[in-house]
Length: 193
Image (tube, rainbow, N blue to C red; front, side):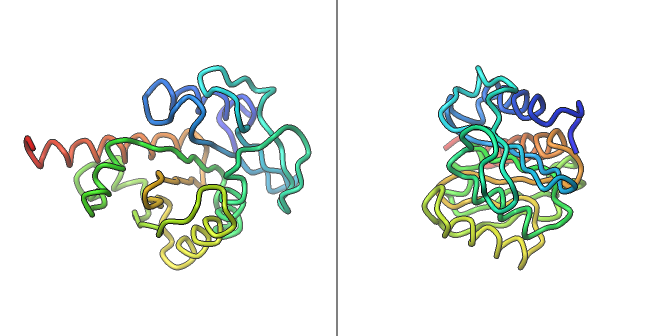
């Protein structure tokens, strides 16, 4: 389920790494880990700067959305939708990677064939149509896209990307970073503008 065995510590570390890499803003992006055996989802909180996130800040929800501890991200519905759509999903990471967003604004998705790390770990990359962040509509759109495509990388139109893993949150983080690197490679291949 998690790398260290402590989902709260893993989520705090992943969010700090995303911020350090410039893939999320100081209060942007979110991550979660599910413990299906206990029926709990550990989730990054709302309002806490990502570079200062501590394990004790991480929220805990039940699978029906009932908050057990803390204040989860406003995107909590989207995370729960992923876990509902794919029973093998164990961790979700959502971010706003600049190179990927720039590529999608050009009407393109990154080509997984250009980078081995993406080709080996992404089932596929797809796009979900725009829906308001944090909304039920976004959660339902994400759930439907995952069920229809089976993709574990879902670009959210004019918003960001959602990546999930059937292994660990660090596997999801690695895939997200690889997709952002792949998007940068695509820009380099396009040449100077």
